[in-house]
Image (cartoon, rainbow, N blue to C red):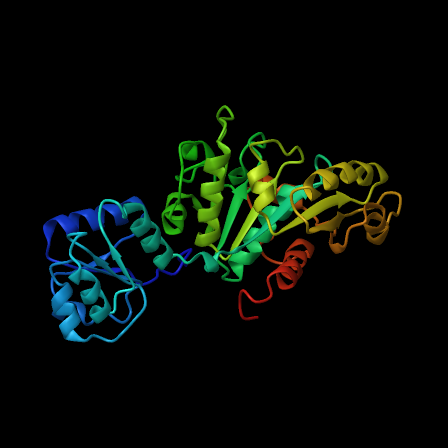
Length: 358
């Protein structure tokens, strides 16, 4: 299953070589492919369904006379800023805007990108963080993403820990080709969601953005912002595995999540350590929910941990037999049946109930 459904392309109507080159170049910079018609006649079929329409000055008058159905998202490229008649032609052609290149290049690029990937379509982001080392946060993050993928929810798993060794190892996909975090160090501006999805490794149908096994290279915050924004547009669900120590490199990830699941073993010392993690994470995300993990050697109950931390209890990770052996074999957590898969299904139903039909 593809990660995202491809939307209709914008339509460019022109036979002017300079306008054709300029508009296609601008579209390419934002990762947008366009359909092209040299005349009004060939443009009729795609006119109603195109994501947006850009009209060259050479066909503007003929378009106005053609009386095609009125639609939003029509832009007219003007040839001469001093041509007062261009505005009347724009009205008659049903154009919402008149642009003059190269001054309006940035505006046109943003409009084309927005036409194929509306910002309102951004997916939800769930962060998972451990209350102490070895709490099982990475296991839950991977299981959550695997369960969502199994339910046909377009999902992207993000490794937020540059010192964690690479979350692709948990999925047995360290040899799968695709870009890792260090490859995005120079990324700036708007990254097309489909381009990001196509560039990442796909492991068992799940798209994964992982760190590699090389020296941990710093990825600037602006690059992290750009990549995560693209991830939100590329998938209905983004799951981020967050480290307990939130530094400047991780802060953009933690700040962007909609909800954080804090995984805490049912132990007194773990609860004490988790209180500090919750305080730091709470400064970046206003919705933190507790996931307890058993067994409880001292019979500490999940509700006791929730009361001690002052957090709502979202669920409990019950012990799952042979989980460690399965992970060593490269079998991802959350696949098949078992307590972990059942917990993840319940969490998805609770956190994202409108994202798919049950």
